Length: 253
Image 1 (cartoon, helix red, strand yellow):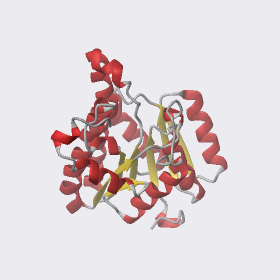
Image 2 (cartoon, helix red, strand yellow; image 1 turned 30 degrees about the vertical axis):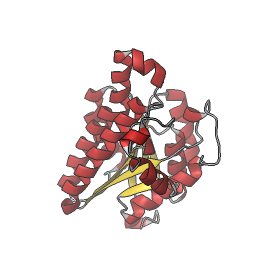
Image 3 (spheres, rainbow, N blue to C red; image 1 turned 90 degrees about the vertical axis):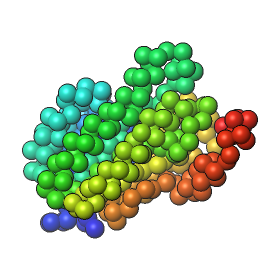
C-alpha cells in the first residue's frame, strides 16, 4: 500500500526503536521514504539508529529518549510524534525485556516490574494511540507480542503472561476499532536473533530480525490481524495450545 511517495507515505512512531526487530522494520520504512519518529531509552543508541535511517532515505526522522515504564510520559510522546511528523498514522510498539524467570519466581517486585514493562505499559500506549486514531478515522497499531503468550510454560511464564495480556488486549481492541478504520495488528514472533537473546543457545527455529521485519511491514500494509513470524510458529503453537493439561504438566517446555 505504502510506496513512500506522495499520499502513500506513512508517518510512523516506533516505540523501542533500538530493539533488533524495530530497527530492522525502520530500515525497510526508511528505504521507501516514510517519516519516522523513534522512541527508546538509550540516547547514544537512539542517535546512531536515527543517523543510519536518515542516511537510508527516511523522509523525516524525529527522536525522543523515552522510558516506557514512565506511564505519565506516554501522551506527550504521541503528541510530540504527531507534531514532528505532521500527523501520525502508524504506531509500532516494540519495546520489551526478556524476563529472568528464576529471579521472577522469588522476587515479586521484579516480576511485577517485568509485567509492567512487557504488558501494562503496552496497554497504556495502545489505549492512547487507539483513541487518537479512532478520532481521525484511520490508523494502524502494530504491537509485538510473542508466541510465549499463547500458553504459560514453566520456562518463561512471567514474560509469557505479560504477552498474553497484550495479545488479549489487542484482540478486543481490534474488534472494537475495526468499525472506525483502525487496524490493530498482533505480531507473534518466535525465537529471533537479537541482542536481547544473544545469550541463549540458538537452533533451527531461530529467525533473523530482517525476516521478521518483512513480515511485520507486510502485515501493516495488508491490514493483517494476527501474524506469527516466521509462519511455522502458528502450527507449533496450535499443537502446544492443544496439549491436555494432565500431559502438559509432565513436559519440560
